[in-house]
Amino acid sequence: MASIVRFRHSSRKPSEASLSRSPLPVAAICRQVRRLAKDLGEEPPSYWVVYRIVSGLPADLVTLAHEGTKAYSNTFELVHRREADRSNAVWQADHTPLDILLLRPEGAAKPWLTTVIDDYSRAVAGYFLSFEDPSALHSSLALRQAIWRKEDPRWIICGIPDALYTDNGSDFTSRHLEQVGADLKIRLVFSIPGKPRGRGRIERFFRTVNEMFLCELDGYAPAGGAVRGKPTLTLAEFDNRFRVFLDVYHHRENAETKMPPLERWEATGFLPRMPDSLEQLDLLLVQVAKARQVRPDGIHFQSLRYISTTLAAYVGETVTLRFDPRDMAEIRVFHNERFLCRAVCAELAGTTVPLREILRARNRRRRELRGVLRDRQAAVDSLLEMKRGETGQTTEKEDGPPTPADNPTKESTPVLKRYRNE
Image (cartoon, rainbow, N blue to C red):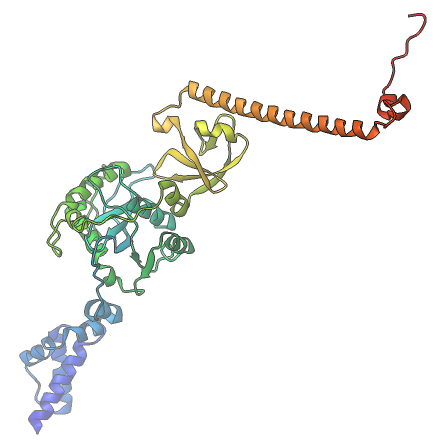
């Protein structure tokens, strides 16, 4: 019986000490148990007995005791993993700060990466880089790039997904994105707050960016570690290198699917569901909208001047501008929610609108206005002639031509008087 009591005392107390909020070394636990056994008049256990008891504690119990509910939930709770059955069935979107310092006028800083990834193939459909904190605009621009066809023919991922899986950030749960989902027929799915493991595809991609790309660049600054070299890249230069990395990533075999993401995305030979036009997509997604008046020399915006021959017919009208903050060389112009044209800033785009085209557009508009004036003048003249004819018919008498007394209009006409001395 005494041996059972000794076992109970020696097994309970080491486990309680080991499961305290601040874990103790086994040697410290052993000292506490020996003091307790001495106070109770029991035989003190050996160090190895205490060690076997502490090391035999379940891992989930230790994690819950030492690290709390959140760590236990992330490590041991069951998670339902969504597995898409085809490309563009489910896309995931998320933001992350990148562990690299990039140059900017205010000083080196870490950029944010917003990424949209296809759940089935693990292929990146679109992304957005910025020094600013994530916002609804960043999500919209990344989704815009993801849906529309890319300029790079090697980057073929595009189309409208059936579902978009994100966290509960304000930029993803906004009414704007809800309206976009309704217009494009995208089902919005949100993860459980505080449980990022459901977004494992995109979290794994972020780790791949760190392990395969960022760690080899100057300015690499991992959390809690030293900066590797001096920052040498600007955001635009980093963007170019990131595009090259994406091409390598898309052709590299994925450890889970055993296929390159690009090959898996197009393996089913499906036809992506696309919006009617890029202008329609801009109207839905790009939130940067500004109202401006069309001036005789174009549209003045952000201390720049944008010109298009189409604007010749809208001088003096108020229009809405929508633009991509990454490329200010071109803006899209809307009038009464209808797309008008793309206007170009010659200083940024490196292209010019020839003067003869401007003159031709002005002359064409002038001829159109003169035609309108001629048509309206002809209509007024016809109406006046008709009215005069009706007036003459009503004043004419049946027994003969009208007399001066019968024609008040003619009597009222002033007569020039002449004098003898003239």
